[in-house]
Image 1 (tube, rainbow, N blue to C red):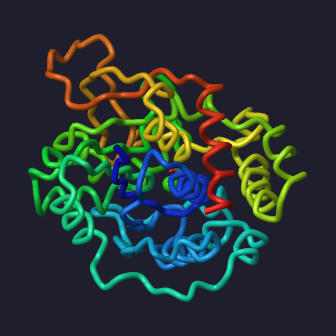
Image 2 (image 1 turned 45 degrees about the vertical axis):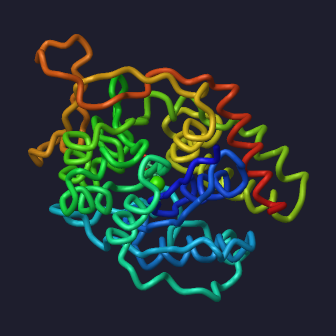
Image 3 (image 1 turned 90 degrees about the horizontal axis):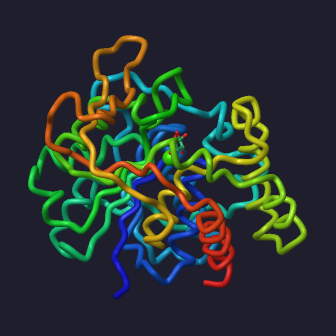
Length: 314
Ligand code: BDR
Ligand code: CA
């Protein structure tokens, strides 16, 4: 059966690709996008989401605008990674001006409504800072029990961070919300341990550049990502973390999960937002989430590229 998918996003380059993947793949039916600040302001992430839907003729998918600030921390953005406005100018210029508006409901209300409507048929994938999902869970603590799965993009279990030495961007931006979703949401946590090894080599962008106008824009997205911190972090290609989450949602064989006890550092010090992964069970606590520790890299890359390409023809 086709699963219902709600995507909580801050597009963002890898968010944009994750949105295209979800639209291009028959394994899921996208019930809506909720936007959040993160890579850029929520005004920009919402514009980018609406423009992407306009571009691929999918304005039937509702967009609900969400949190403009993290729950407790001040907003830190990643325009230095994703471009001014959350995507490079060449990409924003290639997208049409949106003819649609966000729906009236706030993202948090929309998440709660969709959970009530679809229950166990609904998967939520939150690939930006976790603010909207944490607020929804604060209003309705039973939320995670009523839906199929909550996927989070964030964390670095056995590896190091990407925004500070220890923290991944999404959890760093709103550590309190990330902690809340892990403590109460029994999520599937997909962090840098699996998203970095599954980076897309530059040959993928080179191949796409030979194709259609649509594929050339996707190649621009990948090239911009590859030329930023991904290259200085030692990768010859583009890390597309949110797309790896989507590959895991779309194909059960892509990611391998283990139950684990994880905490998020909310103490505000140099490791704020870091994931404290109890690998050896020294805390003797019950597992509170599942962490992705294995990835079938080739399979993941195939799902990412095939699903993106399929979005062009929808
Ligand atoms: C995550 O942070 C954002 O910059 C990306 O869109 C992704 O969700 C990677 O750490
Ligand atoms: Ca993101």
